[in-house]
Length: 204
Image (tube, rainbow, N blue to C red; front, side, top):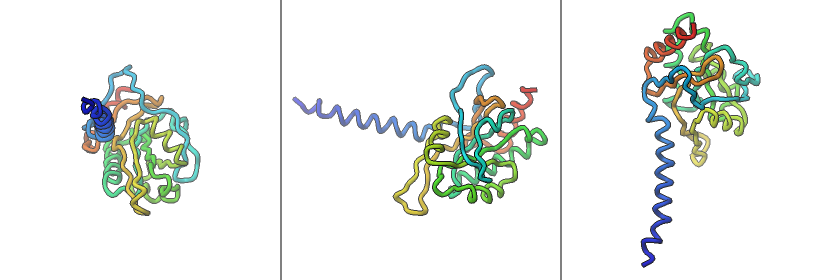
C-alpha cells in the first residue's frame, strides 16, 4: 500500500537531477551558431562587474562604455575549448578590419586560484594585443558569471591539474552594455565577423 508513496521522493529527486543536467549541458548545446536579438528586445544578460586585468588594474564594466564587448568566460589551463575560441575571436576581429577598434574582446577567468594577472598576460598575448583578461576573488568571479548566466564548476578533487567545466558561449554586448548576440563553439571566424559587421553597420 505504501510502496507508490515511497517512490515519490525518489521520482522528485530524479526529476531535479534531470533538470539540473539539462540546464548544465543545455547552456552550451542549445546555443548553436549565431543568435541575435531584435532591436528593442530586452535580454537580461550582463551587468556590473569589478575585476583585475592582466596588468593588475581594477576594471569595471564602465571602463568599456562606448565600446562593444565580446565577453568569454574560460581559463588558461583549458586544453581545447578556450584556446580555440580565443583564436576564433582573434581571427574574426582581423576580418572585421579597422572597425574592430570599436570592439573589446574580454576573457574572464573562471579559475581565479590559478589565473592570476601574471598568468593571464602572457597567455592572452599569444592571441593578439586586443584582449583584456580579467580575474579576481572567488566571489567577484562568481558575481560576474552570475550576471552573464555562465555555468562553471572546478574539479578540485583532481589535484593541482584540475579541470573546470564551464559554458562555452561568447557574448556580444552593445556600447551601452546591452546584450546583442551570442556565438557558440560552432561559430566560424567568418560567421562571427559577418555578424559583428552587421551590428556595427546598424549602429551607424
